[in-house]
Structure formats: C-alpha cells, structure tokens
Length: 79
Length: 199
Image (cartoon, rainbow over all chains, first blue to last red; front, side, top):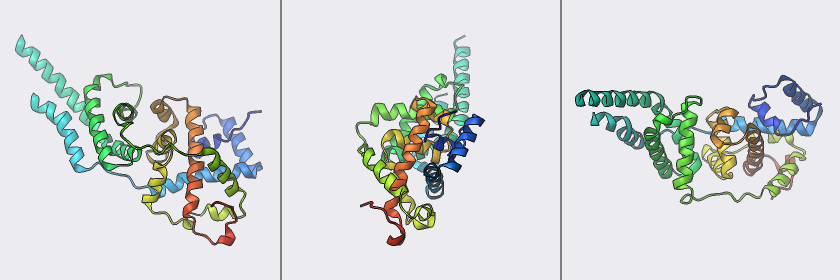
C-alpha cells in the first residue's frame, strides 16, 4: 500500500505522476475522501485561474534592442 | 598565417552569433515575463534581462546540452538575480504560513464549497492576480511562475531550483493553497453562501 501524500495532488493536477499505480491510488483516494477531493479541486482551480487571468509580458522594444546590440550585433560589428 | 588565424576566429564568432541568435534570442519574452514576476518591477526586470543575456553570451560555451536552452538561461538569470539584485529588491517573504493554513482549513469546512470554485464569483482583474503571485515567498513564487505561467515541467523546475522533484511538488501544492486563501479576498458572493470566518 502506497502512502498517498497531499502534494501528489499538485503532481496529478500537472499530469506529472508517471507511476501508473501511484496515479491510480491517488485518483482512488480522491473518489473516497471528500477532504482530499476538495484539495484537488483547489489545485485545479488555482492553476486554471492563473492560466486564464494572467497575461504574458513582452520584452519592451528598448530592452530587446539593447540586448541584440550588446550580443550578436556588437560581435558581428567587430568582425 | 596570421590572416588565417583571424579568419578562423571570425568564423567561430559568426557561428556563436548564429547559435545565440537562433537558440537564446527566441526566449527573450519568456525570460522577461519571468523577470517581471520575480522582481515585480519593469525597470528591474529589464535590467535583469539585459544582464542575463550579457552573461549568457559570455558563457555560451558552457551551455549544457543535456538541459534545454530555456532552463539554462533561467539558471543564468537566477544566478544574476541572486548575485546582483537580491539585496536591492524588496522581498515579500513575510507570510505566516500557520495562519494561512488555518484559514485554508476554515474555508474548506465552509458550507459553500461549490461557490468557492466558480471563477465567475471572483472579481479579479489580471493586475490583482499578478500582485497576489508576487506576494508569495520567493521559493513558492518561482514554482508557480515556472509551472503555471511558463508551463515548465517538474524536471525543468527541479533543475532550475536545484532541488529534488518532490520539493517542487510540495512547493506547488503549498503555493496554490496560499493563493486560494488570498483569492478569498476577491470573492463576490452572498454572505449567506459563505459561512467562514475569514476576517
């Protein structure tokens, strides 16, 4: 019998449990334990909320230009 | 002989530039996004990105082919951040985890679990969620940014943070619990539906 720790719920949320038996036992515990199941729902909820709400920040043009200038352009100019 | 040596050097330089341009430059936006969320400030994020790419270019020969270029760049950024910026940037690592854990358990035992899991019940602009993530302690913030925003695997996060995968797992579990507890401040449902003492 494997001990199913709470933090496996994070791994299940992220599809990071590679051991099939462990995955199955974690899923079984979710079905049989309401408290555990709610923890799982919270993990999923937060992950999906972040994915939905968070926008990606793009590199400011000024910063991008400076990086290009300091690396590949500067080195090319030296040749 | 001297001319041929110069030609060889130029050829190496050209190869390095092509490789760097092809492999490292495409990750600029992901690294900027990461830097912004770690520092919580666009000025510091820009400076951190510039310094990171400068160092990455210098040390390009040390790129470890066994790990992805993105993870390697993130490591360079982590080292840059800790060596230069750590002391300059305001840290928020003042979370009282025991209190949050107690609040989390109170929330769990409330009568309105379903309402708590409806996204529509949260009045939460993007700026707020960014702020909430920024308020997490550094170690927890890092795993959330890498996993839930940048979509990194546990192996990559473990490589980045230099911790075992089990630690990544437990930090993520804990970070999401804290975030959920913080989110309750933005819950917008009827008081009768939400019978939990969260003041």
